[in-house]
Length: 90
Image (cartoon, rainbow, N blue to C red; front, side, top):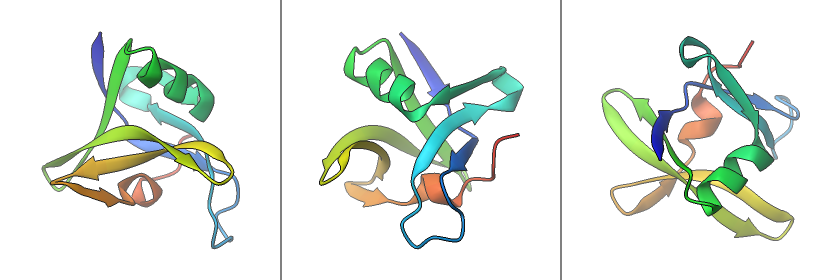
């Protein structure tokens, strides 16, 4: 199992108040996956994913929402929006 840092995301609509992440990636790591691929990998326990913002790690977990599964960060016992704050993937 690899522990993989996510450094960028692609969102469905940056101008919407309900931004949906479509892809997660790390250009220096040479990868960009769909949200579904990341969810599948987390659930299969083949990889773990995290963000590192201002030296603070936040693990990425799968959440069951009203519109299906999505990913969200969790650090210090709190859910946060670290993923939405990441820059756009190329």
